[in-house]
Length: 370
Image 1 (cartoon, rainbow, N blue to C red):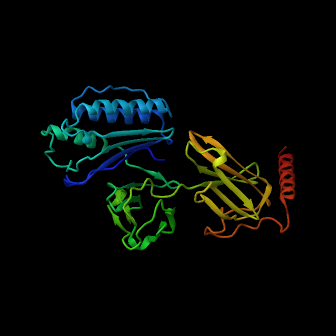
Image 2: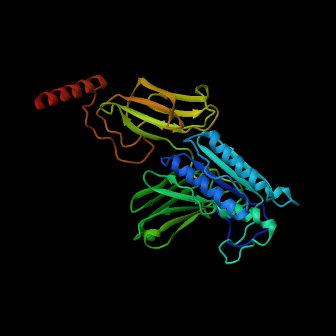
């Protein structure tokens, strides 16, 4: 799960272009102590480089919007005191906070080689920019959960026509092990037959200029994807919002689908339809999150959806009652690749029959053990 994002400056100075710098924190499995440490790291590094007495020890409550907003305001106020007085635009500092996301952005930051032995701390007008860079560049990069694997990604300003994705791979990985497919709206990366990244892109890619390479050795081995943008724009994510699904119920007689949504989405915004095995889920007037023929048969009268809050993340949860309880679903939609379902049920058997059989087997099993 994403914990923090910090884009890094370029190696060389580039004083003539607009520059934005984002820091993003998303709530994940790492809880309160990590956020406190992250907050202290930001404040202490800024205090060290700007020589300003920033407050320490701010206690962040788990998933507290107000606590995170307070820390942004504190950083903004303290930094404003060391901004270049002759050009207030350089001090443009923006923070946005929601239930599960924090974004801090500073505009018009100069690029400079921070890895060199003599950074330009002697120049007072550079202190603010370099202080912000230095305080944030070493934080954890953005990591996105991909089913047990993770990747990080970065991009520069809006004029940067390329995203760079870093996917950890085994030390022995070779080019011949990589399956790489890219289309204007989709990306698929597999290594040795195992999926690393697959799905619909956030926006349109330039297929001709997109490529990958392997870098690093041993435990540092990574597959780097250079994803070219089709037009000048800033991507908010690499992939479109995706759904998760899993069997549910006592006998796995249901399929449960979860789709993350924004805080402002209400039930009246949702467009849900299920007809003759074809499922569609979207926001009204927008492109569907999920649409296609279901992998197996369902009972329309035993299907519904609702909006739930799952550990701070609002989700649309769709529950589908299987028509054949003992049918195994390898995929959610027929359009997704994979092998067919396991025919562990008799043709023509229905939910009531399956449940009766399963209940009978369970009863006899318990009786024998007694």
